[in-house]
Length: 282
Picture 1 (cartoon, rainbow, N blue to C red):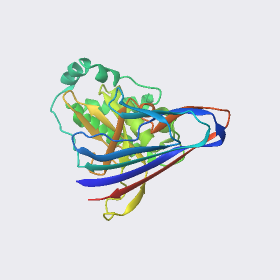
Picture 2 (cartoon, rainbow, N blue to C red):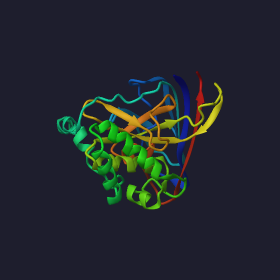
Picture 3 (tube, rainbow, N blue to C red):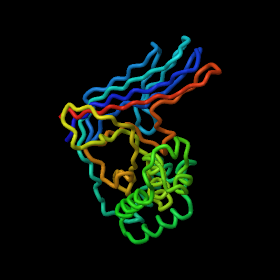
């Protein structure tokens, strides 16, 4: 088990003064099996009116507006979370069991549908079908599909963006964790396995000393439904979800879980800034 302190700062710097801005932040983790939130706080400047709620997919959201002129919007989320390894539990259900169970739940039906970001190319659809055909268990097929996607894509920063589709990333065979997660989702859904996008953080250095701050970043992985339960896998690293993964949000794709999104009044340009620092406390 790890106790991790995460400090995530982000916001926008504007080229001039903006009259107002309206925003949503998804930066605070929640407690669930395998993850206990000890403390979580979001500080926003300038002073604003805010409203907290949990969205359709179970993610904590802070909606806020700034109605005074400003040149910068700054947010800092500070969380202390205890996490333990969360290996998936293989249920032993077969494809028919999965089909019946998935059809009985609205969210699993929705998570079989592709989005503009997850729609997979035909080559990947064929590969996922071939893998699924070798397995009686959807769980076993899902793990092999995710691992195959991770093996096929070279992790390279700067070649894709938040709007890059799975098909475009596949064509380049390059991308980051967001692209690899979208490709895994597309492949899983094409094989008939409901799957969802997970956003959060990954402590990048398991050997880091207690109390040593480490530069981190947001991370993405996937979860799938096997007919009885949800299991997770990190296709970027080819690993189970361990005690260095901190979950913040879930959804159909990245568009459901961006850390910060909003609109502002004014014709000036804006620039996003981001920094993440993760410290192991125990």
